[in-house]
Image (cartoon, rainbow, N blue to C red; front, top):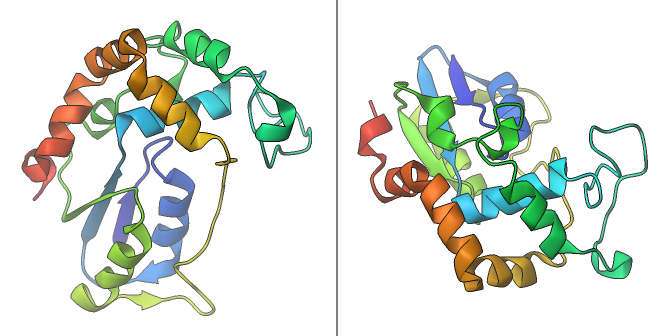
Length: 185
């Protein structure tokens, strides 16, 4: 059985689809890691009601937001609100990736980036996986608006107080990204 470990804001719904869609007789464990700055911003887009792409948070059935630019959202205020929520246990989307991983070990560790789909596709031959009928790796299970992401990332990384607060809070995640060996089998 192949299992893709689910960490909120690390393509966790995609990981769930992959676990249910790929078949093998071997035991294979895969973990997706993500840049903490990008993961933080994606969490902000989920949990801050004023900009949640669900239209509210928690979701209440309001139409999904597809683009932020036409809405003239105040992403700076949303980021400040989320920074104040760091470390509060009820906000799992903001928790460190390492807090979910604990002492687990994985056969494969991939970054959630432009290579994610090709990295997942490479597992088919490596582990002799059989996809279920009509499966394709190029599925988007949940996709938040990305139209202002570059602007927001420049703001986060270019604002020393924000960058430093995130660097401090996610220090263990940044260390993990520099060396996957601690979580590899």
